[in-house]
Image (tube, rainbow, N blue to C red; front, top):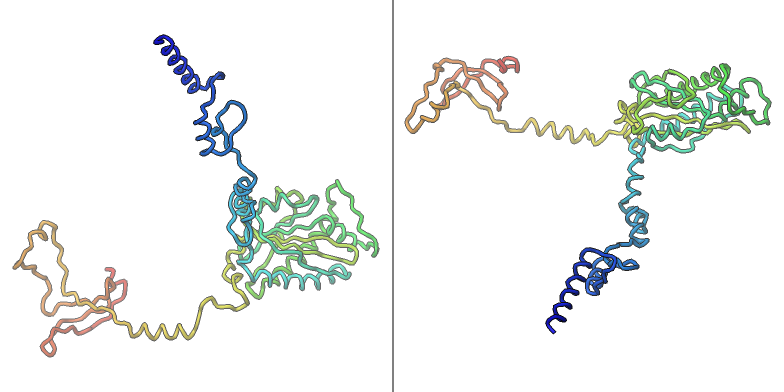
Length: 373
C-alpha cells in the first residue's frame, strides 16, 4: 500500500510539474480555468487556459478608435479621431477675414469684367484652415501657383489658378467664341503666352486683394514668381497653419477656380485687427472706465521715505550688534536728504524742525538718472 501511495504522489507531482511547464500533455486545471475565465473574460479554444486571451468586442474597438456613439454632440473626441482632428485649425478666430474676402469678391467681379470684356461672376465656395503641407498635396495638377509677397508684412502668400480657369482666360483674351467650352490639352507644359496671360490675371487679382485689405491695414501684394510645380512654391513649413479661400470664377459657360492661401505667419502683423468682430471694435476699452481709473490713481496713497544716511557694515559687525550699540551716521545737520518712494528717488532737501517735529524742506526734484548714480 505504501508503494502504491508513493506512486500516486509521484504521478500527481509529475502532472503538476508538466502543467506548470506548459507541456503539450498537460491537463488543464478546472479551478484555474474558472478563475481565469472570471477575471480575464472569455477564453479560447483548445488546451490553452481561457484567461490567457482577451478578445475585444466591437463596442470596445469603437471606443478605442474614437468612433463610438458617445463621440459627437459636443463631446470630447479620443483615440484615432482625436489624432485626426488635431490637424484641423479653425479660421474663425479671425472673423474679419470674411469681410475681407467678401470685399475681394465684389471688387474682382468688376475688375475681371473690365479685364476680359465679358460677363464674369465671382463667388466664394468656402473659407477654411489647412496645414500648408496638406494643401500642396491636394492641389490638382496641372495648375499655376503664384507666389506673392506682402510688402508691409514682410511675408508671402500663394495664389493658385486651376487648369480650367487658365484655359478659359486664354480662350477669352484671345477671342474665343462664346458658347463653346475652352479646349484643354492635358499632358503638356504651359506655353509662354499662357503664362503671360495668367500673370496679367494674377496682377489684377493681387491689386484687388490689396484693396480689400485697405480698410483694415494698407498693404501691397507684389507678384514674386509663377510656378507649375508645388515643390517650388513652398513658402512655409508643412505643419504651418494657413487660411484658404476658394473662389469660383464663372464666365457664362466657362470658368474655373481660384484659391488664395495666406499663412497665419503672414497675417500675424494684423492679427489684432482681424480678431475684431466688426470694423473699429475696441477690445474691452471703455473711456468712462479709463477716466474713473485715472481719477482714482491721483488719490492713491504712496509711502514716502526720508533717508538720512546709509552705512555699509560687514556681516561680522552686524552680528555683534546688540542692545545699546550705536551706529554712527556721516550725515551732518545741514546734509542733503533724499526722499524715496520704494526704490525710486523722488526729491532731495534739507532736514529741519517745524512745530516740534522733524521736517524736510524739498529743494530739488530728482530724475531717474541721478537716482541711479
